[in-house]
Image (tube, rainbow, N blue to C red; front, side):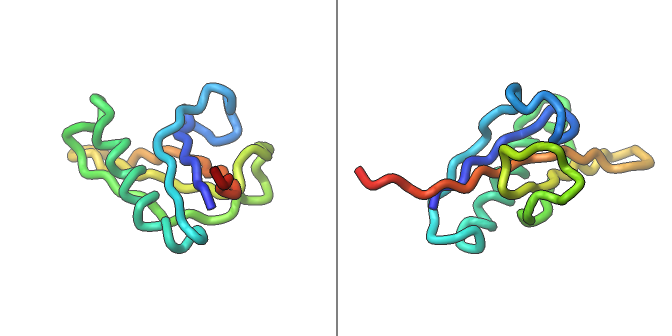
Amino acid sequence: MKYKLYRSFGKLDKDVRKHELVAVEYGPNLDAVTDALIHAVSADLAGTPEYANFETAAFAPEPVKDFRRVRRYTHEMTGIVYPTYADENILVDYGIIEEPELDP
């Protein structure tokens, strides 16, 4: 299977066509690529200039929640930025498209 990871600009349901492709992972199922997707989200956030000096992490992928209006994604993830001096962490939504891998 092929898993395409996209970063949203705020909320997953907003400006879906403007979401940026962050990573593409291949594996037999989502469990097999979960660690790579978590690493990709964390690295993407750490590579963003505004978050470069902060610790980053991500939650594991899960099916898109029922309340979401977006139908493009099969799974979603949340990236976490831990600012040094802040009352709250920064959360960034990511979407995942699961597709069969095409044979060459």
